[in-house]
Image 1: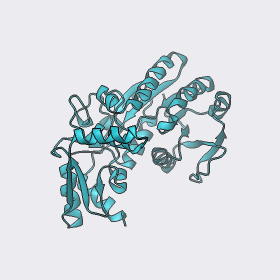
Image 2: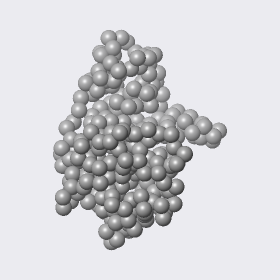
Image 3: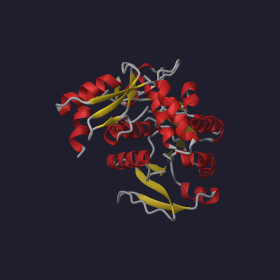
Image 4: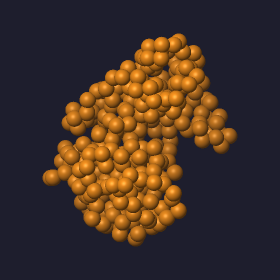
Length: 301
Protein backbone atom coordinates (compact mmCIF):
# COMPACT_ATOMS: atom_id res chain seq x y z
CA UNK A 1 0.00 0.00 0.00
CA UNK A 2 1.28 3.47 -0.86
CA UNK A 3 1.55 6.05 1.90
CA UNK A 4 -1.38 8.31 2.69
CA UNK A 5 -1.87 11.84 1.38
CA UNK A 6 -5.01 13.47 2.82
CA UNK A 7 -4.91 13.81 6.60
CA UNK A 8 -7.39 15.47 8.95
CA UNK A 9 -6.56 16.31 12.57
CA UNK A 10 -9.18 16.53 15.30
CA UNK A 11 -8.13 18.54 18.34
CA UNK A 12 -5.47 20.42 16.40
CA UNK A 13 -5.56 23.46 18.69
CA UNK A 14 -4.47 21.52 21.78
CA UNK A 15 -0.89 20.94 22.91
CA UNK A 16 -0.53 17.55 21.21
CA UNK A 17 -2.62 18.56 18.22
CA UNK A 18 -0.40 21.55 17.48
CA UNK A 19 2.72 19.39 17.59
CA UNK A 20 1.23 16.85 15.19
CA UNK A 21 -0.26 19.41 12.81
CA UNK A 22 2.95 21.42 12.56
CA UNK A 23 4.90 18.21 12.03
CA UNK A 24 2.63 17.12 9.18
CA UNK A 25 2.82 20.52 7.51
CA UNK A 26 6.61 20.70 7.83
CA UNK A 27 7.08 17.56 5.73
CA UNK A 28 5.17 19.01 2.74
CA UNK A 29 4.02 15.42 2.05
CA UNK A 30 0.41 15.74 3.17
CA UNK A 31 -2.71 17.72 2.43
CA UNK A 32 -3.57 18.70 6.00
CA UNK A 33 -7.05 19.64 7.20
CA UNK A 34 -8.11 20.43 10.76
CA UNK A 35 -11.59 20.16 12.23
CA UNK A 36 -12.71 23.25 14.11
CA UNK A 37 -15.87 24.25 15.92
CA UNK A 38 -17.69 27.34 14.67
CA UNK A 39 -17.08 29.18 17.95
CA UNK A 40 -13.35 28.37 18.02
CA UNK A 41 -10.87 31.26 17.85
CA UNK A 42 -7.86 28.99 17.28
CA UNK A 43 -5.45 29.82 14.47
CA UNK A 44 -3.56 27.32 12.33
CA UNK A 45 -0.65 27.32 9.86
CA UNK A 46 -1.48 28.90 6.50
CA UNK A 47 -0.90 25.62 4.69
CA UNK A 48 -3.75 24.00 6.63
CA UNK A 49 -7.36 23.75 5.44
CA UNK A 50 -9.85 24.50 8.22
CA UNK A 51 -13.12 22.56 8.14
CA UNK A 52 -15.77 23.94 10.50
CA UNK A 53 -18.10 21.32 12.00
CA UNK A 54 -20.81 21.01 14.62
CA UNK A 55 -19.47 17.50 15.44
CA UNK A 56 -22.76 15.78 14.62
CA UNK A 57 -22.18 12.43 12.93
CA UNK A 58 -23.79 13.58 9.67
CA UNK A 59 -21.61 16.69 9.49
CA UNK A 60 -18.54 14.69 10.44
CA UNK A 61 -19.18 12.23 7.60
CA UNK A 62 -19.22 15.11 5.14
CA UNK A 63 -16.08 16.59 6.67
CA UNK A 64 -14.19 13.29 6.50
CA UNK A 65 -15.07 12.35 2.91
CA UNK A 66 -11.95 12.21 0.78
CA UNK A 67 -9.65 11.90 3.78
CA UNK A 68 -7.22 8.98 4.02
CA UNK A 69 -6.40 9.41 7.69
CA UNK A 70 -8.05 10.81 10.81
CA UNK A 71 -5.74 11.73 13.69
CA UNK A 72 -7.48 12.39 16.99
CA UNK A 73 -5.54 14.59 19.39
CA UNK A 74 -8.54 15.33 21.58
CA UNK A 75 -7.92 15.92 25.27
CA UNK A 76 -9.72 14.23 28.12
CA UNK A 77 -12.80 16.39 27.64
CA UNK A 78 -13.14 15.02 24.09
CA UNK A 79 -12.57 11.31 24.72
CA UNK A 80 -16.30 10.56 24.60
CA UNK A 81 -16.58 12.09 21.10
CA UNK A 82 -14.10 9.71 19.54
CA UNK A 83 -16.51 6.82 18.88
CA UNK A 84 -18.77 9.17 16.93
CA UNK A 85 -15.76 10.27 14.89
CA UNK A 86 -14.80 6.63 14.28
CA UNK A 87 -18.33 5.87 13.04
CA UNK A 88 -18.19 8.88 10.73
CA UNK A 89 -14.77 7.78 9.48
CA UNK A 90 -16.16 4.36 8.56
CA UNK A 91 -19.08 5.89 6.67
CA UNK A 92 -16.80 8.37 4.90
CA UNK A 93 -14.41 5.66 3.70
CA UNK A 94 -11.41 6.77 5.75
CA UNK A 95 -8.55 4.25 5.62
CA UNK A 96 -6.66 4.83 8.91
CA UNK A 97 -7.52 6.21 12.36
CA UNK A 98 -4.97 7.28 14.96
CA UNK A 99 -6.74 7.61 18.33
CA UNK A 100 -5.76 10.08 21.03
CA UNK A 101 -3.08 8.02 22.76
CA UNK A 102 0.24 9.97 22.60
CA UNK A 103 0.93 9.54 26.32
CA UNK A 104 1.35 6.67 28.77
CA UNK A 105 0.13 3.37 27.42
CA UNK A 106 -3.53 2.49 27.81
CA UNK A 107 -2.43 -1.14 27.32
CA UNK A 108 -0.84 -1.05 30.79
CA UNK A 109 -3.33 -2.11 33.51
CA UNK A 110 -1.36 -0.16 36.13
CA UNK A 111 -1.70 3.04 34.10
CA UNK A 112 -5.45 2.46 34.00
CA UNK A 113 -5.51 2.00 37.77
CA UNK A 114 -3.63 5.26 38.26
CA UNK A 115 -5.63 7.24 35.69
CA UNK A 116 -9.10 5.67 35.37
CA UNK A 117 -10.06 8.16 32.64
CA UNK A 118 -7.58 6.37 30.38
CA UNK A 119 -10.01 3.43 30.39
CA UNK A 120 -11.80 5.42 27.68
CA UNK A 121 -8.64 5.20 25.56
CA UNK A 122 -8.52 1.43 25.97
CA UNK A 123 -12.23 1.16 25.17
CA UNK A 124 -11.67 3.10 21.95
CA UNK A 125 -8.89 0.74 20.86
CA UNK A 126 -11.30 -2.17 21.31
CA UNK A 127 -13.94 -0.24 19.36
CA UNK A 128 -11.46 0.36 16.53
CA UNK A 129 -10.68 -3.35 16.44
CA UNK A 130 -14.39 -4.01 15.90
CA UNK A 131 -14.31 -1.72 12.85
CA UNK A 132 -11.43 -3.48 11.10
CA UNK A 133 -13.98 -5.62 9.24
CA UNK A 134 -15.53 -2.41 7.87
CA UNK A 135 -12.27 -1.36 6.21
CA UNK A 136 -10.98 1.08 8.83
CA UNK A 137 -7.48 0.33 10.07
CA UNK A 138 -5.88 1.96 13.10
CA UNK A 139 -2.58 2.64 14.84
CA UNK A 140 -2.13 3.41 18.54
CA UNK A 141 1.01 5.29 19.51
CA UNK A 142 2.30 5.37 23.09
CA UNK A 143 4.95 8.02 23.66
CA UNK A 144 5.09 8.32 27.42
CA UNK A 145 5.19 11.89 28.71
CA UNK A 146 6.71 14.70 26.65
CA UNK A 147 10.25 15.58 27.74
CA UNK A 148 11.05 19.02 26.29
CA UNK A 149 7.46 20.25 26.61
CA UNK A 150 7.14 19.06 30.22
CA UNK A 151 10.59 20.32 31.20
CA UNK A 152 9.90 23.80 29.84
CA UNK A 153 6.49 24.28 31.47
CA UNK A 154 7.16 22.51 34.76
CA UNK A 155 4.84 19.56 34.17
CA UNK A 156 7.65 17.11 34.90
CA UNK A 157 8.39 18.74 38.25
CA UNK A 158 11.40 20.81 37.21
CA UNK A 159 11.08 24.59 37.73
CA UNK A 160 13.78 26.17 35.57
CA UNK A 161 13.11 29.73 36.77
CA UNK A 162 13.38 28.77 40.45
CA UNK A 163 16.06 26.10 39.86
CA UNK A 164 14.04 23.60 41.88
CA UNK A 165 12.97 20.02 41.25
CA UNK A 166 10.53 17.68 42.97
CA UNK A 167 11.98 14.16 42.94
CA UNK A 168 9.86 11.09 43.57
CA UNK A 169 11.25 8.30 45.76
CA UNK A 170 15.00 7.75 45.21
CA UNK A 171 14.97 9.27 41.71
CA UNK A 172 16.74 6.27 40.18
CA UNK A 173 13.83 4.53 38.47
CA UNK A 174 14.33 4.31 34.69
CA UNK A 175 11.63 5.48 32.30
CA UNK A 176 11.34 6.85 28.79
CA UNK A 177 10.16 10.23 27.55
CA UNK A 178 9.53 11.62 24.06
CA UNK A 179 10.37 15.04 22.65
CA UNK A 180 7.81 17.07 20.71
CA UNK A 181 9.42 16.73 17.28
CA UNK A 182 10.02 13.02 17.85
CA UNK A 183 6.29 12.60 18.47
CA UNK A 184 5.58 14.45 15.21
CA UNK A 185 8.14 12.33 13.35
CA UNK A 186 6.56 9.18 14.76
CA UNK A 187 3.13 10.16 13.46
CA UNK A 188 4.35 11.11 9.99
CA UNK A 189 6.39 7.90 9.80
CA UNK A 190 3.35 5.82 10.74
CA UNK A 191 1.55 7.36 7.77
CA UNK A 192 4.53 6.56 5.55
CA UNK A 193 4.51 2.90 6.65
CA UNK A 194 0.83 1.94 6.42
CA UNK A 195 1.35 -1.82 6.08
CA UNK A 196 3.87 -2.17 8.91
CA UNK A 197 1.75 -0.12 11.31
CA UNK A 198 -1.69 -1.44 10.38
CA UNK A 199 -3.87 -2.39 13.37
CA UNK A 200 -0.99 -2.20 15.84
CA UNK A 201 -0.30 -0.52 19.16
CA UNK A 202 3.26 0.84 19.01
CA UNK A 203 5.74 2.38 21.44
CA UNK A 204 8.27 5.14 20.75
CA UNK A 205 10.62 7.25 22.82
CA UNK A 206 13.38 9.86 22.69
CA UNK A 207 15.32 9.25 25.90
CA UNK A 208 15.70 6.51 28.50
CA UNK A 209 16.55 8.28 31.73
CA UNK A 210 15.92 8.84 35.45
CA UNK A 211 14.91 11.88 37.47
CA UNK A 212 18.41 12.05 38.94
CA UNK A 213 20.01 12.05 35.49
CA UNK A 214 17.81 14.99 34.52
CA UNK A 215 18.85 16.81 37.71
CA UNK A 216 22.53 16.26 36.89
CA UNK A 217 21.94 17.59 33.38
CA UNK A 218 20.06 20.73 34.43
CA UNK A 219 22.72 21.54 37.04
CA UNK A 220 25.51 20.99 34.52
CA UNK A 221 23.89 23.08 31.79
CA UNK A 222 22.78 25.90 34.10
CA UNK A 223 26.04 25.86 36.05
CA UNK A 224 24.06 26.14 39.27
CA UNK A 225 22.98 23.86 42.08
CA UNK A 226 19.27 23.17 42.20
CA UNK A 227 16.99 22.85 45.21
CA UNK A 228 15.74 19.27 45.48
CA UNK A 229 12.38 18.65 47.12
CA UNK A 230 11.90 14.98 47.96
CA UNK A 231 8.55 13.24 47.84
CA UNK A 232 7.22 9.71 47.48
CA UNK A 233 4.78 7.92 45.23
CA UNK A 234 2.48 7.39 48.21
CA UNK A 235 2.51 11.09 49.12
CA UNK A 236 1.86 12.17 45.55
CA UNK A 237 -1.03 9.78 44.97
CA UNK A 238 -2.60 10.79 48.30
CA UNK A 239 -2.30 14.46 47.33
CA UNK A 240 -3.79 13.76 43.91
CA UNK A 241 -6.80 12.06 45.47
CA UNK A 242 -7.22 14.91 47.95
CA UNK A 243 -7.20 17.50 45.17
CA UNK A 244 -9.57 15.53 42.96
CA UNK A 245 -11.90 15.01 45.92
CA UNK A 246 -12.00 18.77 46.36
CA UNK A 247 -12.83 19.27 42.68
CA UNK A 248 -9.32 20.38 41.74
CA UNK A 249 -8.40 18.69 38.46
CA UNK A 250 -4.69 19.40 38.96
CA UNK A 251 -4.76 16.16 40.94
CA UNK A 252 -5.23 14.39 37.63
CA UNK A 253 -1.94 15.79 36.37
CA UNK A 254 -0.18 14.30 39.40
CA UNK A 255 -1.63 10.90 38.52
CA UNK A 256 -0.42 11.26 34.93
CA UNK A 257 3.08 11.99 36.29
CA UNK A 258 2.71 8.88 38.43
CA UNK A 259 2.47 6.79 35.25
CA UNK A 260 6.13 7.67 34.65
CA UNK A 261 7.66 8.42 38.04
CA UNK A 262 5.58 6.17 40.27
CA UNK A 263 7.12 3.29 42.20
CA UNK A 264 4.14 1.05 41.55
CA UNK A 265 4.45 -2.75 41.11
CA UNK A 266 3.98 -3.81 37.49
CA UNK A 267 4.10 -0.29 36.01
CA UNK A 268 5.77 -0.34 32.58
CA UNK A 269 7.17 3.15 32.06
CA UNK A 270 10.37 2.18 30.23
CA UNK A 271 9.39 1.77 26.59
CA UNK A 272 12.97 0.96 25.58
CA UNK A 273 12.04 -2.51 26.85
CA UNK A 274 8.63 -2.65 25.13
CA UNK A 275 7.79 -5.67 22.97
CA UNK A 276 6.31 -3.43 20.27
CA UNK A 277 8.99 -0.73 20.34
CA UNK A 278 8.81 0.94 16.92
CA UNK A 279 11.76 3.35 16.93
CA UNK A 280 13.68 1.20 14.47
CA UNK A 281 10.77 0.49 12.14
CA UNK A 282 9.81 4.18 12.07
CA UNK A 283 13.36 5.49 11.67
CA UNK A 284 13.41 7.29 15.02
CA UNK A 285 16.79 7.81 16.66
CA UNK A 286 17.34 7.83 20.41
CA UNK A 287 18.01 11.38 21.59
CA UNK A 288 20.27 12.92 24.24
CA UNK A 289 19.05 13.96 27.68
CA UNK A 290 21.77 16.59 27.98
CA UNK A 291 21.18 18.06 24.51
CA UNK A 292 17.45 18.26 25.18
CA UNK A 293 18.03 19.99 28.52
CA UNK A 294 20.48 22.41 26.90
CA UNK A 295 17.96 23.33 24.20
CA UNK A 296 15.09 23.80 26.65
CA UNK A 297 17.07 25.91 29.12
CA UNK A 298 18.31 28.15 26.30
CA UNK A 299 14.70 28.85 25.28
CA UNK A 300 13.22 29.51 28.73
CA UNK A 301 13.40 33.19 29.81
